[in-house]
Image 1 (spheres, rainbow, N blue to C red):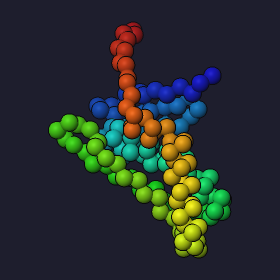
Image 2 (cartoon, rainbow, N blue to C red):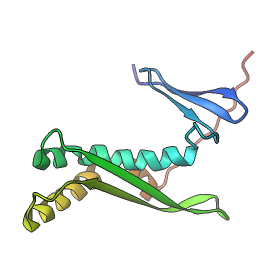
Image 3 (cartoon, helix red, strand yellow):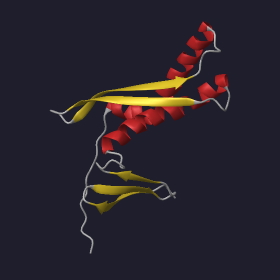
Length: 135
């Protein structure tokens, strides 16, 4: 059975996102919630991170540490993000210039091949809203 995702309203402008596999996330505009825009940025950063993880691990070892930053330019007039920057920060000091160039090329290729979120944002998508009455 496919993983199911849904939101449940828990307060004024506050929701909890659920997965049928168990994890949850608080969504809204309160300080302890992720906004939908935050989640979009995190989805892109997470996709870059998971798509490239094996490439980094192959060179740096399975226990390498990294932090992935993400920021976005927001256009209030059109109510959309116009650009996002992702930065993968890890210790590469033990690599030669040639090893760095090879790793970067392989990381970028892995992300270009495997990052569904990036593919979706770059190529656009459609969505469909259905409103259902339930008593």
